Amino acid sequence: MSQKKVMIAEDSSVIQNLTKKILQFQNFEIYSVKNGKELLDAVQNEHFDIILLDINMPVMDGIEAVTQLRQHADATKKSIPVIAITGNAANHSVAYLKSVGFTEYLQKPLNFDQLVELVKKYTQN
Image 1 (cartoon, rainbow, N blue to C red):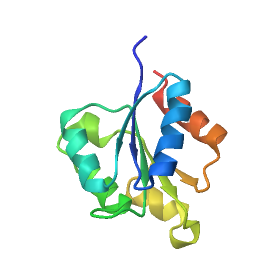
Image 2 (cartoon, rainbow, N blue to C red):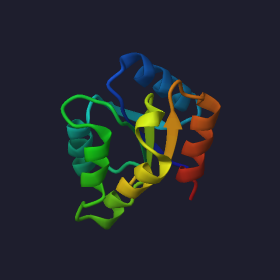
Image 3 (cartoon, rainbow, N blue to C red):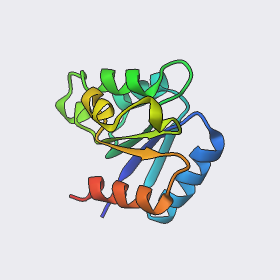
């Protein structure tokens, strides 16, 4: 069975590295970027099974990135499951996050058991 590819778009190196280590331990292939623009560039060139997307990032935030992703011409790319990750849960309701295109939502500080559970849920065939 080939490894499932997980993209982590997160500007915090600490959170990015922790998330990488935990998911690599679960046998996922991990890619990472620091902002929404880098994410959209990566999606053009590579297939990902799931995207973990921080909302507050420089250059292009997660809301703009998921909005653009959902408008992608390629049906496979625009339907990739995207998990919102935010430290400011009060700023956005779950209904709003789903309305702009997020599949699910996780709050910081991350509960890594919950993270692994969600990633597995959306990457099962």
